[in-house]
Amino acid sequence: MRTIRIKLVDLFAFDDKPPSLQTPDVTAVISRVLKHFGFLPQPLAVTVEGDEVVLQFPEESDVAQSEAARLAEKAAKRATEGNYSKAIGIFKRVLELQPSLYSARRDLAMAYMEIGDVENATNHLMEVLLLDSGDAWSWVVLANLYIREKSDLETGEDFLRRALQIKPDDAWALNSLAVVCQKRGKTEEAISLFEKAILANPDFANPYYGEAVLFEATQQPEKH
Image (cartoon, rainbow, N blue to C red; front, side):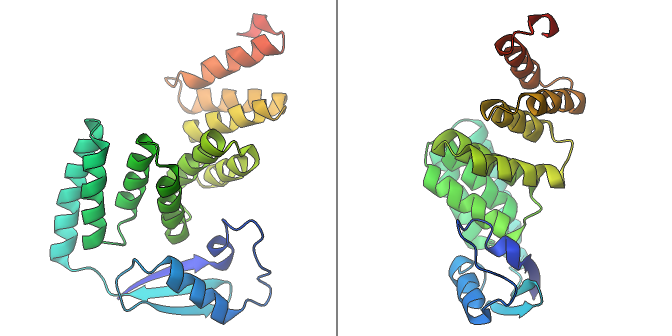
């Protein structure tokens, strides 16, 4: 059997109005888990222990995991070639074989992003993060979806800050948060974040450009 523990606060992380978790409604929590994690191998056992919900389910067979790994590599190759529709089909088969394979679910979301299917991309990223809230890259990708496709800077900023709690030196997260801060009028924080991104990855061009644009906009051309 495989066991996954999820913080109750993370289980409701994507709700506009999350319920009070001081005295959680255990029946409601279990019902929610069964609804959102029905894709996991069955039978799925759910219990609530303190501030966590515990999921237990059968481990996928070695044969299934091996075939899933082979197909995931094939799907990634198709995505690299730009054949996203083909990659999506293969990733779906991967997740039929190994539903708990987070990386394939995240890569499927990325492929959906590439073809402009925002709804499926968002849903799969949320599934990844519900199962593994420590996946910093998925927080970054989801944040950029909210910022770019939904024009929701506030939620995007929250997700980027979650990513940076996990990986404080992630240059992509730092740069993305700097751009959000710039758009929200937080100029000094934006400059600081651009500089941190440059320090984290001196070969990453985006923060140099972003900082130069910001200096130009604030009439500090001598700094860029």
